[in-house]
Length: 379
Image 1 (cartoon, rainbow, N blue to C red):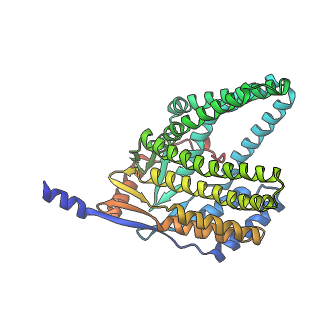
Image 2: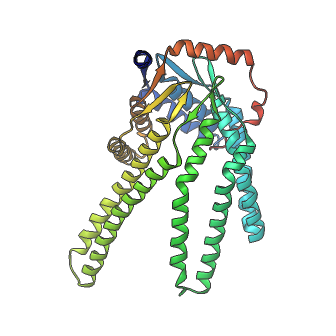
Image 3: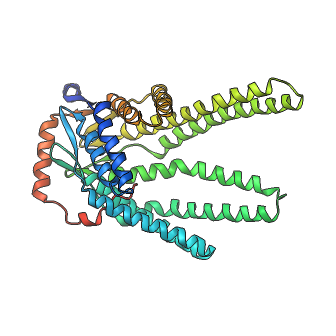
């Protein structure tokens, strides 16, 4: 048994991801995309998206082989036209009457699971590695089972908040309003980790590489642990800022000249605090998802660090602000390079033989008829 374990351990090969894109190269693509999108009143945005994805996919390597993005811009444009029409119809319905607007919102929310399935199928079907396509099992029934409770509760939440606001307008001194809003916020906050786990699990277990299914080994406990820690940190950070703010208000009442300085200090800390929270949750949720991905014994490993992500977000934001957005390509390239540098695949055996086997089995099965029903709606 010990010999078998040693052989199995020795058979695991760590293949790092690499990103070879350059800011100068991507800037040339980006500036043309922006110019043509403006000149065509947004129509070219579909082609811009394809060119951007093709550049990032083509410069992302695993075991000396790059990924490929094969989407047809026309399909993306059709999806965006449909999304635009739906948005216009919904906007028009809200201006007609509350009943019509509410009915339109319900219909739209009922379509969200189907739209998400079609969008995921489109994105994965047009992603390739070593001539093997990724794919997505379009299980609409399961999608509606997974999304039914979140969609219904979100709709109920929106309806309840709207009604509470109407009550507050009619009775500005209503004492129950803050308590009701706090209860609603806490309820949504406590349910969110479960929602994210269910949605992530659905996306992963219905994804395929060739004919092999992905597996997701995380649990709701992992997601609750991550978010409860985040909530605790947010309470400490913003609670501390609130305490400082209360002190500032008292000094202002006493006519102290320090109040202006306190305001500036709090504002200077507020923006980095928001960025830190964003970096923290991005790093933790990305690591949690990727570190629990498994496909035929091959496991992904992600080691994003909150501190370095925060550094990237701060420097990227400042660079784009100072250059009026011209350094956006540089920001995207350095972020993609970092993400690839901390991501790897622990391969059980020979990756080349595995991908070749996937290509043969996929070719034998043939392409699924139904691409016309997949679309990119921005999910």
